[in-house]
Image (cartoon, rainbow over all chains, first blue to last red; front, side, top):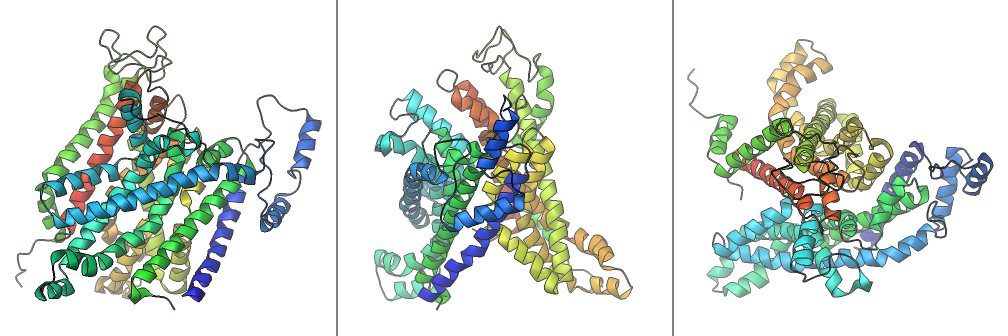
Length: 307
Length: 287
């Protein structure tokens, strides 16, 4: 198991290398540069700037230099936010994004699994219909629609919650962003959980358990839940990726000081190092979370256990 | 020889689909929205980018024929929203077409040629799958796509072809062993000829189904990019950029958010119902 995990972890490296290389050249080959502003700089200053940031060298050299720095864990200085290095910007924003993402995933699991179980147990009754309606809505609507609508309803009309801002993660400020980000994932978890539990409950070993006279609660907890959880677990990887991308939108909608805004902002400003830093951060996150989901899956399901 | 009176897969699916009230209603709603988007702007005296200085950020009203109000620059929201729907639908369809063409070509070649070519081509698809492609697309769209609709739908379409390619490859592998392909090969038809005349026409059914399911994803993707400000650029509007604009003004002018947000929700829900209906029709017994 340990050897397998290490092997998988090493397997991430080539993918990461591809990501870094592809995005480096996309970013550099695009028209425009970080120092093309409205007022043109005097050529001498421009040349000095280019030299200071190494932009006067051939592209291949810049690429090698970037890789060398990266190997030392240095993401370089930001081109536009002058006094900051990319690592500092990430260190500032990441706790916010991480809090948001983890809370959203927790919400999805804590809400989605019970709802899915409820839907399966009370199949085709009133509660199940309500749950299915919630799932349909929450899966279909994107967060850039639900976010502003929630803010409009609970923030501006009812005045229950703040519309935007962070305030060091005060719970009141967290509720709407976490709901916006977490509800679609919760809905998807609900759908998967409901479907797989319905299937498991029809399986032979459940019939055997019933025949032995076990109570329904015990059957559910001891025999049905664990196999029924498998599809949910394998969805966790994509779910984490969804949350990571979704946080881009949610941070924009609720004006949160996370790292999400830097990707778009950096790309528009041609802030090469900042964009690269974001791509690497989110790339590593997506790959690691997917790997974690795979490993959990193996731990839950002995049939695919990797030794 | 007498053929048994069996329904073909598609005839049966069509019969089941006609019985699916929700999917039929959804299809009618989508058709109505598309029709409105096509014809609606001609009903209004305003253009999508004309500024009406006398009516800045007014709520919906009849007198000035700003039926859904105006934005901060006095542009009519009824017309802008319908233009937004046009662009969203257009990009959704074109991007789907791009993804289908790439996916069909890639998957059928990989599946038909097989061997090392197949391994290599599908491994490439696997690698692309594992990339956080959204970030790369955001970068791509920001650097190359801003301001040009063509590059926007090409970029969006270039993302969607991976699953199509996998489906097509699977179907091609099955087709390859059928007698009529063997007959074609025996009579000396070349690889390209077989692909174009025998393989691809037989793939149209499943690919068309998957394409229908892709359209809402593409619409969503375009709105997402436009919402972030890297998609459709001013003065053109898409539903995504209208929602973004509306979200910034929602304190003083909630209608600016509500109109495009509800319309996009309606469209996406309808596409979802149509997709569910199609899936149920083709795979009865599921769920």
